[in-house]
Length: 93
Image (tube, rainbow, N blue to C red; front, side):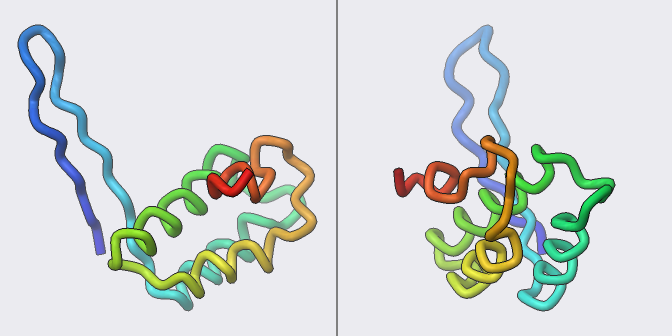
């Protein structure tokens, strides 16, 4: 399911700003996260961060489940990339 949040167009000459989030089923998200967390995965750190931020934003908005966010944390608990430091990524730091 695709969930898009469109912010009002400010005033000229600023473009419209569109932030989209992708809502996966919990099973699909866990599968993607497991693949993304593997050594040599095609998913970059930016991709993994995007998955985490999407899951968190959708859970906060009531579209997703908090358990999906916790699944990502569990699967990536040994993450070495400082950009994906889980407390700071989730806004808990």
